[in-house]
Amino acid sequence: MRDFHKPGRSAVYATNGICATSHPLAAKVGVQMLEAGGNAMDAAIAGAVLLGLCEPQMTGIGGDCFVLLTPPGEDRVVALNGSGRAPAGIDAEKLRAKGPTIAPYSADAVTIPGAVDAFCRLSKDWGKLGLKAALAPAIHYAEAGVPVHERVAADWVQATDNLSGHARDLFLMNDAAPKPGQIFRAPKQAGVLRRIAMDGREGFYEGEVAEDMVASLQALGGTHTLDDFANTACDYTDPIMGNYGGLDLYEHPPNGQGATAILLLNILKHFDIAGMDPWGADRAHIEAEATKLAYDARNRFLADPDHMTRLDHMTSPDTAEKLAALINPAKAMPGAVPGAEAVHKDTIYITVVDKDRMCVSLIYSVFHSFGSGIASDKFGVLFQNRGAGFTLDQGHPNEVGPGKRPMHTIIPAMLKKDGKPLMPFGVMGGQYQSTGHARFVTDISDFGLSPQAAIDGPRCFAEGDVLNVETGYSDAVRQDLAARGHDVQTPETAIGGAQAIMIHDDGVLEAGSDPRKDGCAVGY
Image (cartoon, rainbow, N blue to C red; front, side):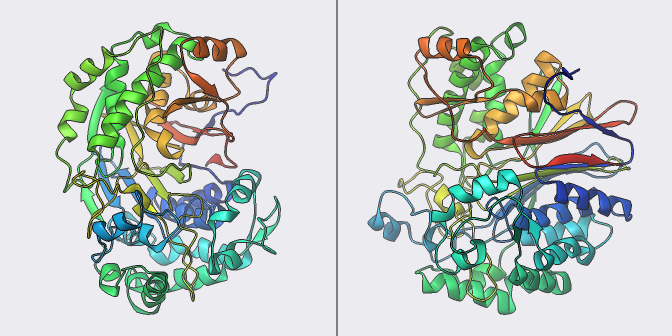
């Protein structure tokens, strides 16, 4: 129970269904889909696509997604990989000649958008209302406009320099970021969404829209072709699973970094986390050290599953035991050398549970803030820059190559208890996401926190040689961490965001939504 003398959020309880996400308009649209007879998948698609307009710096139809779901009345978890691939014509040697890493705001960094194909497939396989109904709210608001919310405005103003060419005309107002309350419209996107609503994936990956995207990228030196777009296809995969404190954590398999969260939790099992102050220095220190070790393994091994051979190593308890033995509870180790992948903090997450207890956990992103900063000339499709997640290190499993998927940081999650779905959840925040998953699971398991209380708690994150510590931690904790050798810094913006929906034994749904974002949970 929270202290009602202090600012905070109450949990949201409902019995029929809940949608939790980072923007109130998207949460409202999700619930409207449920009330209209749709299911959790209809609601998740409607809300996610709308978030591309409400939070265009975070996501959009030029991006990728990953999804976990439980079918109505079933306990099994289904995973879908909606991430796109590098164009067939990409050449690692030519990119190495340009520099040590892929330029993040160039056509070289643009991988083929995978999310639209995934949404079309998910709607067909699991939805009830159809794609036209799911896309109708986004089409309406793309033309009518949405007021820019506070957190979105704060992110927007930090990312204006990422935008180039035509994208500046589409996403800036008088060459400046919009202020809170200003109306943002995207009529060109409405035109694209209408084509998708009418013609399905062919309306995006073939015909006029595809021709516009290919011509725009080729004009900037990209190797993208119409065949690259036409051949885009999402994949159903088997989720990977770890356990901690009586809970089973289901993660999306590579090329997402879910295996890193499982490795992190396996390391934390070797410490008495439950005996620590949840917001004290001991827990922050152990989590930071475990993060350095787990992320070092991620940077070495994680890649497109067709090119990765060390997944079993990452999820092995033996690996975690050996890594845990390297942690000194009193002293910080040097930060692991970051991988070549670019650092970012931009994505959206949406989760929905409906009256039949179908659960959807969906994460959707354009990578950097406003992705590549490149928009197509005619239809204004803003491209992601997921290709910046590749490395140019020769022979590395995540080395850029034709038709490969890059390592992704975005990961949806699902918790089960005693074989039953307990909670779809996700933690936004770029690199932080694996650590955020581990923190959330230990909050629930070790400290018995509610979803909202777990989300509200202060966060810290070891990134390279820096330990970013939110202002919610006390000065005494910060001093203690510095004394252990951490380079303690306060991040410019709060670390990540999270959403979660818990299914209680009596059927009542309880949701939490991160106050670090503009959004909320809405139920009925």
